[in-house]
Amino acid sequence: PGTGNAGGMNVNVDELSRTIASRGVKVDVYVRKNASGLPAVADVDGSYRVHHIDAGPPTILPVPRLARYVLDFAAGVMDRFEVPPDIVHSHYWLSGWAGLTIRRNLGISHANSFHTLGRVKDLAKRRDEPAESLLRIATEHEVIEESDCVVASTRSEANDLMERYGANPAKVCISPPGVDREIFGPGSRSDARRELNMGAGPVALYVGRIQPLKGVDVAVEAVAHVPGLPLMVIGGPSCSQGKAELARLKEQASGAAVRFLGPVPHRELATFYRAADVVVLPSRSESFGLVAAEAQTCGIPVVASRAGGLSDVVSDGVSGILVDDWDPTAYAAALEKAIIDGGLGGGALEWSERFSWEETADRFLELYNGTAKSRETLS
Image (cartoon, rainbow, N blue to C red; front, side):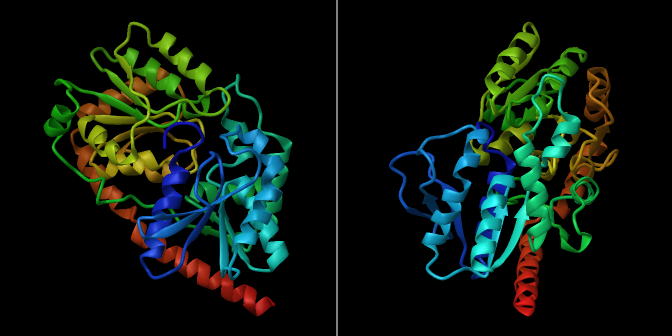
């Protein structure tokens, strides 16, 4: 996660699958085969299974090119069913399209989590970003209309589904992701810095993919307004503009104390969180913000945009500071305040207790049972 198309959604699917499988539920995850040599079925730590489905060439493709293979993917998934499952839970608009196709063909229950919404992204995008395709917007409307349940990560996303897409409130369920507390939790800052070969002094941290939507340009300019505050950037280029954005950011940061570290394995992020004084997330759009939840679980305050789900994940003045726009000077002031205010770390740790995969799994199992029973009653 943190490069290409992989991000919080991938972590979400993995953690949710592991937790639900630990309850004795059989979980199978179906993904498009994007590399040659992958097995048809892979066992994940004895927990759940991943099926690699032939749909298009076995290579990583840009998201716009994936649409032409959705129906092939859906057909490949149905061919793998030994027995049709009780419910299909799809993630993202493309998989929502596939899930809806399976629902129509087999008459089984279907839930969808979007993670990002095209209309919301268009409202928040930077001027040089292309608009989302009409195909995406139309597909999102169709998936929302026909799914048995639409899962939102936050109240903000639920409101977007209802206000911008006309979603039926009775079909909208709010279920925030959790945090793996075996990996993420408070720890010694000095030990973390020693492990990372870092010196003393305040440090800001950005974690996420490199693309205009994430607002890394705002973070880079913000630290330039805070003398002596270096910024570590963890993540790799994503989307069609990713590589150009990374080159632009490096040019923008020339002469500033900004280190571009690239992506790191998810489990290693905890050490970077603990080494930082503050995490900065100036996203222009965010349905949840898993990085914010993870950082707070490590006791690190978050300075974030008051955008989408971040306004629910970060408690302004308690676990971090929310900034109303993308003015770098406003972020600079918030970063300074977060570093000086020693109480935010404790507030972050306390606020993070609401993010639990166990509780998330409880909500989903209740949702799955309710959705499946409702469909049985209708049929």
